[in-house]
Length: 216
Image 1 (cartoon, one colour):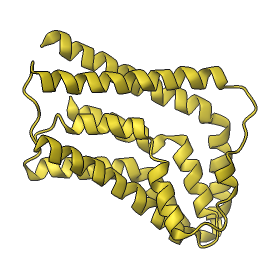
Image 2 (image 1 turned 90 degrees about the horizontal axis):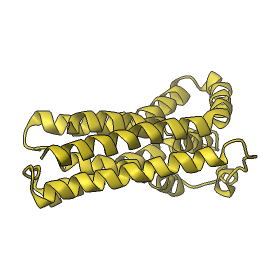
Image 3 (image 1 turned 120 degrees about the vertical axis):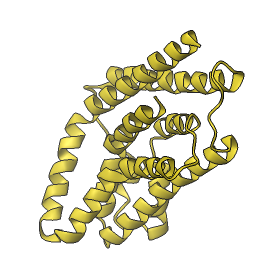
Image 4 (image 1 turned 135 degrees about the vertical axis):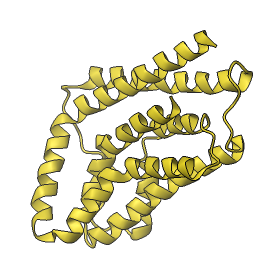
């Protein structure tokens, strides 16, 4: 189940609308592709640090079933799931209200490369990343295949911003109009995207973890 958890969580991370919007604004700034690369570096390294820290704590070995550590991991996944469900309902209650552009989004034109890298860390959907770390703790990390899975998870989480970076780099003549259109579409569908992603992952984490606890 941990593999399926990582796939679902990776897809949710890469489709989160707020980081994508922030990244589009970084790309639209002066020397956008350089700052975009810094953003991706900060984003990717933060994922690597979380996963490496998880493996260091667990020793790369999953907890034995029906033990306190195993139940603790499942309880953590339930907690992350409940938080995601709460986020979905909170976003639902706010949908339809006039949206204000966050102050930081209006000050990205002259940001430094270091600030762009920091944004890559700050804009991580950390609840989803925490759920991903809990899933990693359930893996037996000892083979090339297991390490490849973790690399693929990081790449999946990064796929959307990396694709936009490559598009802006290789198609600069059409990138501005395309990115502006994408940002407008995301702005008009942001609430629905957050609600759907948070509900799907939240319900999956809670339901799957409760089933495993009961069946132990």
